[in-house]
Image 1 (cartoon, rainbow, N blue to C red):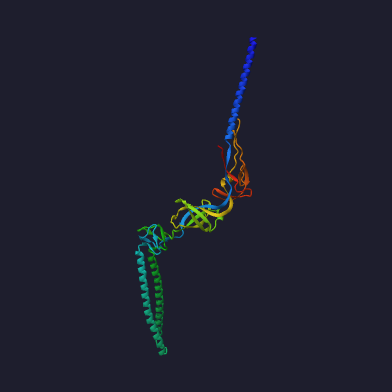
Image 2: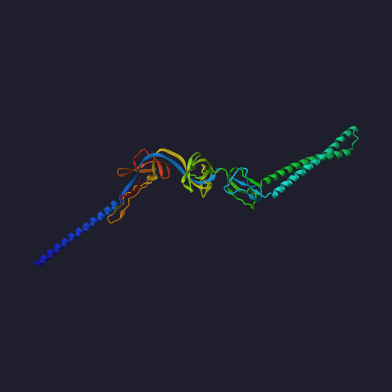
Length: 402
């Protein structure tokens, strides 16, 4: 009996331990389930939306370029020589006709004096030829009368031939002297021209931007005119030269407005108007661009020649259009990732739709609406659709719920 009782007690204890083991395993499984359920719930998302509204949107083309004077003149010298004096410096205001610099005049003064003396010699030669002509002409006239009064017997033929030849010679000498005078006159003008060019005068009213010479420097004008000064006519009127990419040049035309900024004044927006779009292209590192010229009012003299510029040209203004952030056109809904029983994560596939569309929030679910993109301006886009109304919620982002 005792052995039977021990067997019964052993079986009861074994059953009790099995029941407790099953109980603990069940508790562990429930805990694991709750852990991963909470993990999945913690990964839920919420949608960030904005209210759809209508407004005006200006479409722009961005370009870069440089500020230049509206009109500038390079002043050079047509004669070679040594700079004797320089009368102006950088940033000086000058008037038209003001003396800027002078060259040593020794060589050119000597050439002028020589040409002047040659002209005087030519004039003296003319007077001598005229005197000889007068004498010869008088003799020929006297011989004509003598021939008539002597019935052709006097003068002798040899005397007549000699005086007639002398007469023709003196006429030629006069013509030669006159030609020499004309030649000497032109030589004198050329020498005077060169002498006058040793003085460098300002051709316009303006500001000295560049001064390339100093006293004692030698300038040579043999093959090309050396530039001594650069003068800007009026720095209150500037021009902006910008390079337009060939993909955008079809949108650009004269009369369009633009705004731009410079690094020196990042908080100031300057305005400009396109005056000209040049048809000649420029190629730099295989990039084709076209030059557009803009007029800039610089009455405050803040802008300096050579400043680099980032400009936005207004090509078109869309009136009363749906305007959304470009993020709304790029948004793709992401479904929450779910955990597997063993702790892994399953990613939902994202299908990219290339047709322009936005997502609106209907209740708590996103809905895709196809749209037509009218244009972009930085972070904003204008869209067109018959399926949307003002006041609807447009999804622009999706973030994890806290």
